[in-house]
Image 1 (cartoon, one colour):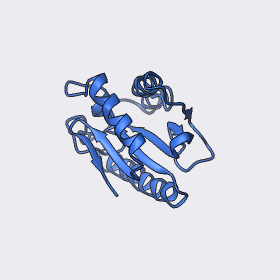
Image 2 (cartoon, one colour):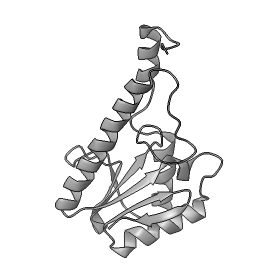
Image 3 (cartoon, rainbow, N blue to C red):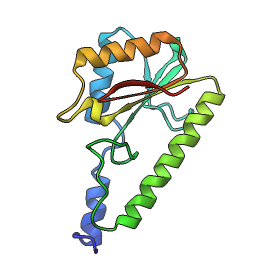
Length: 156
């Protein structure tokens, strides 16, 4: 099926999608600040340019959009138009995520991915629930985990 927009309109729409300081990043930053956890943002020197770097605990946190990073939740839906194009693009994002996380882990960084569905939408976690999970993982010393609407999932 063809795209419903002409090339110029599609290009304009795609440029409007924020890559930093998104609503989900702002919410997570507020929760980290409320917990008193010092962090840096968008460190280009690290693989994947993590959204948050917590030097005191040698950990990084990514906020992943469920569509762009193919999360298995209600926010991900395969597009009806240009399906092959989108699946290839999203597949490359997933492969890049795996590569970046592996590089960070090899360098001794702990990695947390907070999925968009945990931060927004009808099933999002409350600020209290999300803060508890963030603090639990940051202070635990565990190497790799994800937070989504089902809670925290360790991946080590």
